[in-house]
Image (cartoon, rainbow, N blue to C red; front, side):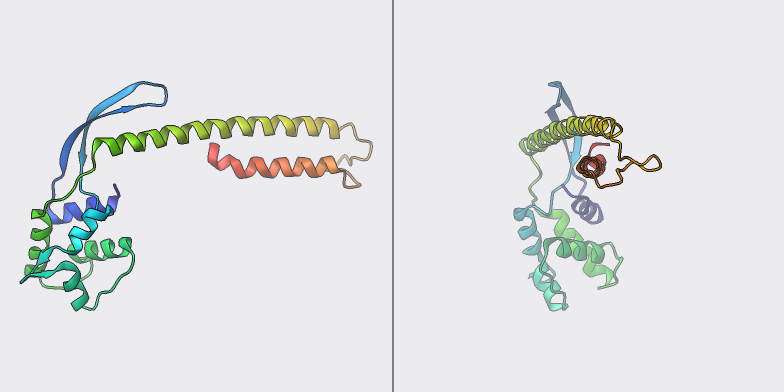
Length: 191
């Protein structure tokens, strides 16, 4: 779930639900606990319900926003705009209208994330951890190659003493620079 959805829930007075969860970790252990969850308004069902929510004299939230001249195409922009209006960051309407909208959102039936989606997220995190380990191994291998190249290049009679590179553009120096570039590009992903 996104933080924007949780913040929108809090502004409207939706307290969330406590759920028990079990997740398998990378090393095969099972973690369990209790977590507070909120409806995720990025989920299509909740997003459509939010926009079609009847507020004020039967108008939908989307219709009310449109009548006020608010037009948006992206889900994130819509949710952020609704949040900014309801949290009164943007002064858009009177307090009674705000409270009516908040009450309608608070009293609506929302779909909450289920435990199976948490398991899917955990499996993805495990896959990412495995990729990080592979990346770390690649970095180690590239570092070893770089050391071997440097040792080999140090034997070259054309090498200048004041720099790390050969006087006549030896192809081994170019390979060494390429290896250094690869290490630099992968470093942020590993560390």
